[in-house]
Image (cartoon, rainbow, N blue to C red; front, side, top):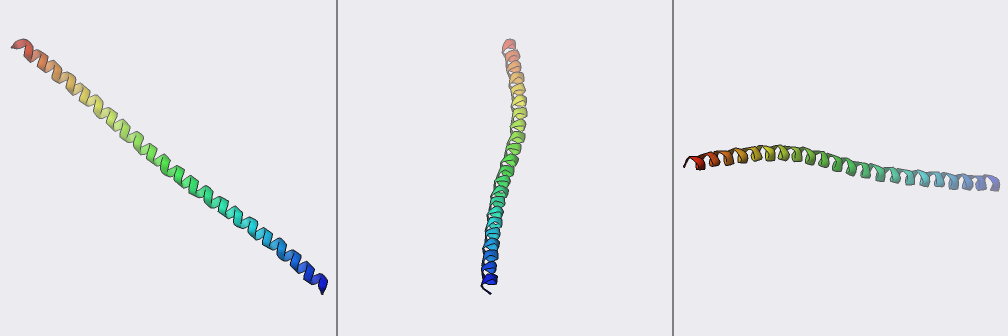
Length: 81
């Protein structure tokens, strides 16, 4: 009987150790998932910013062309006056 009780306690400790190891592994995986989720959010934000930057760059180029045309028009107008 003592042998069975000692064997049971040994098995119980082993099982508890396995459960604790699995619990720690799950926590590590949760942390990894949270970090990856945050990284994905940052990646999406960077992609959006990149798209917005490209749109702004295109708009600036268009405005620059308009300013050049206006300057040319004013130069022509000034020359005729």
